[in-house]
Length: 443
Ligand SMILES: Nc1nc2c(ncn2[C@@H]2O[C@H](COP(=O)(O)OP(=O)(O)OP(=O)(O)O)[C@@H](O)[C@H]2O)c(=O)[nH]1
Ligand SMILES: [Mg+2]
Image (cartoon, rainbow, N blue to C red; front, side):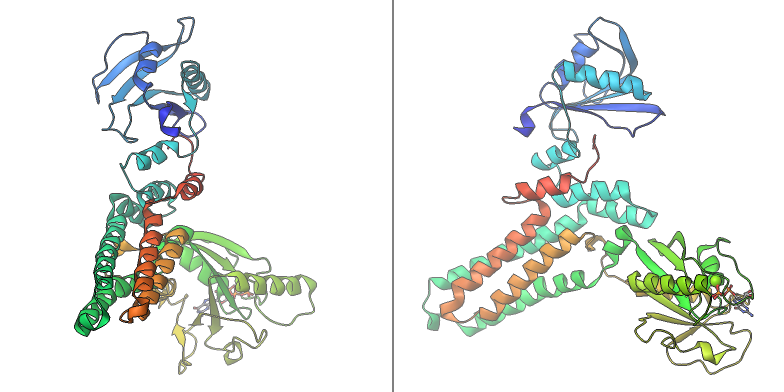
């Protein structure tokens, strides 16, 4: 039994630091701590005690603050102790091993949080938010994870599940009546309700990919003919002087990547060699790599030079090149009628950069969302919600036909279970195993 044992882990990251924390959780947490501190003190929960922690020979291993949280008022819902000592890897290891000697078991990755889920302190989507919060690469992503951790997303899923329970009850009530006794108005109302309370909001949630983007980030490639200003754009967007810029066509050969963020979305921006036919083997290889970078990017930006119309055709060199955004650079150099689909820019003249930043954000899904707290932030949630929506729609299509009514109820129960997987409700041991394998030790 997972929850029967008392677990221990070094909760702070590896390496030296100001403070290092060991965390214990389980029924023996307090008594093991008393032995460790060689005291009979009954620790008052949530009070800090300055203590020495001793080894088997009564030698001090380290000293620091001992904090006791009495279950269920703790992170895990069990008796929990935190030993806040010095951030010395050596001392932490010795202290940790001492807790094992005294009866603890080494915690598995994420086991503290798993116990919190198993004791109903948080739901599974909140547990995932804990990792997301730790791993977030931008402040906006971290804020989004915090919202999920606060339970906004989980509450929304609960609401859907309650709605499903209610509509299933209505459908099952129909089973008790012969068909002609159920007025068609009843079905119409039920249909409207399912449409409004479930299908529409779920579709809206599934439509936005911003939540996943905030955590997974996006790769963006800049392509175009030589000398159009691709490297200048990379430097301008990232705010760093990373790529060499010269007026010699064919300056960039290698794919050069820079990490930064746009609208809180982590971006890996790739500058590439100018696309043209060349006899130079180095340049040929650069062009080949540029094409590969474009093919694997989430977003491809094509840059053209306003003063050179021969650079405006994105398909001139690769007819199968797919571009998502078209930028007309060097607008300071020529007054032209902007071809359809192009966004104007002058890096030299410092015109249009902000609107390009916003367009990239929008292309990556950052459009006004009514309710950011309900954003889907992981592939696991997306799959579960899509499965659920499919069942709801299938059930709805059969509603009103007497011989199908129990099939409708079955589909909607299925939809309920799919949503339950998001929160860790139902028989979901395998889901817990998978989710928590991605955690770090001590969380
Ligand atoms: N007038 C003007 N010149 C620009 C602008 N943007 C870039 N340039 C100049 O255009 C030249 C080429 O810029 P790069 O950024 O090196 O162009 P590139 O597309 O990376 O070129 P390759 O690496 O050769 O493919 C440089 O001399 C830049 O200073 C602009 O908005 N206006
Ligand atoms: Mg370049």
